[in-house]
Length: 132
Ligand SMILES: O=C(CO)COP(=O)(O)O
Image (cartoon, rainbow, N blue to C red; front, top):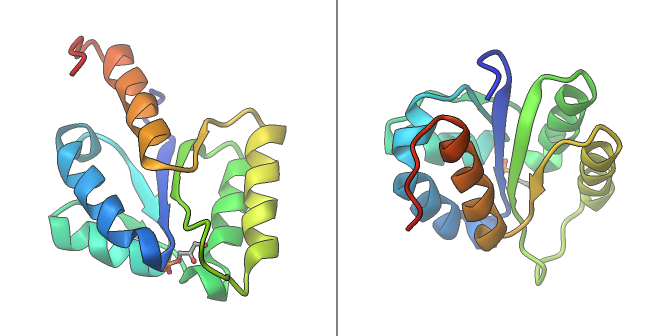
């Protein structure tokens, strides 16, 4: 994984608990990786003990800021723990982020199962050849 690029982590409120469990499970990889997150998600990631650049909260523009980083080529992958049952006032920002990931061919996981596979790919890239 290019050292200068970050992994972006975002979680809707209904998925924060799953995001925390996921990040804890993969903390070895995340300790070695530049992390960026939307505001509240970032606070949770910090509480796990990881260094993370916190942007604005999602509804205040955090997803849009991550979209901008994607467009600038500064994001290696986006792990987005979306809540498909929730209503989000900033849904247009979410759609923009996903569109820009597709446009710039940036890996985007929108649920924990896909995030797990993506992270496995990073571990393989880094030579940690363990499949569990
Ligand atoms: O709203 C979000 C994703 O769309 C997440 O934002 P927070 O991390 O600030 O809760």
